[in-house]
Amino acid sequence: MPEEQQDEVLNPEELFRPIDIVRANAPPLEPLWGDFLFRKAVTSVVGDPGICKTSLGYGLAGALCLKQPFLGIKAEEPVRVLYMDFESADPLVSSRANFILGDVQIPNFFLYNSTDFYLNQIAKISIDFCLRKHINLVFVDNQTAAFNTRDENDNSEAARQMRFIRQFANECNAAVIIFHHTSKANLVGVRKGTGAFARARLADICINLDYPNEDDKEIIRWDVPKNRLIDNKPLWYIKKMEGKFELTDPPLGVAGKPRVNTLIYRAQQDILALLNNNNAEPMKREAIIISLPQYVPRTVDEALDRLKRLGRVSIPRFGYYNARGERVL
Image (cartoon, rainbow, N blue to C red):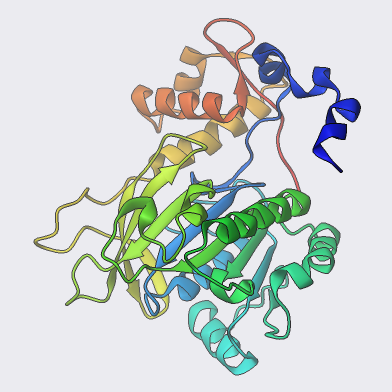
């Protein structure tokens, strides 16, 4: 549509709204796993080729599909996965799955691994499949192979790709993880990914994976330089051993935070369960603390603050909390 005609059809009342109206009517954020996966959000995971991004993806997908915690954190709702692998043939997929997942059957873990199409060519059929199968977590592995990229350094092309991924996440009503390779340059933060900066700039959450000690390839650093959904940017160290991943301490001689305590995530889930089981009656902060003696008051307060920022709880009056409804698939 020509630009000079757009003003004739656009409704200014829909475009320009008081902030209080937006706050009152906006749906809450929908976290799927910790502070790293949210419905309709794009999480970019960047790392060197061979650092086990795909293996980590299989481990995360398998654990959440089986209702098990991954790195000590449980999913917020039942998870159904579509893993879109644009590089691996069936023998490699099978070998990797057997190594990471073992013999367990996972009927809610779906795979696409044809190399005949790019993501934009199969978008509609993929969205229809996700909606029909209630998929709420999609992996795109990896960004370069998923698109017919002409120039990795072209910001306008990268912006179009990321806009496409965001529309894809919205229409699937799913969290999307997209893997990307590390830059050849020794960069840090959101500039770590190869090529155009628009890829990191337009992602909701950026996770960088690297080796803190090149002599120890069993420990991976998990660094979050960007999280636009919630103000939490942890620095983790993950040990990989025989296809399994667990949080660990940084290697000797490496500066960093100690093992991350995932207690806060469990506290959030226990608070929501408590509020949902309270017959929709608001609970005072003191009552919540008394009902959850396994947590110190500071942990409860931090969990309540996070849930408030996520829009998962409301405050009908000062000092009282209500859940906004239990989410089911």
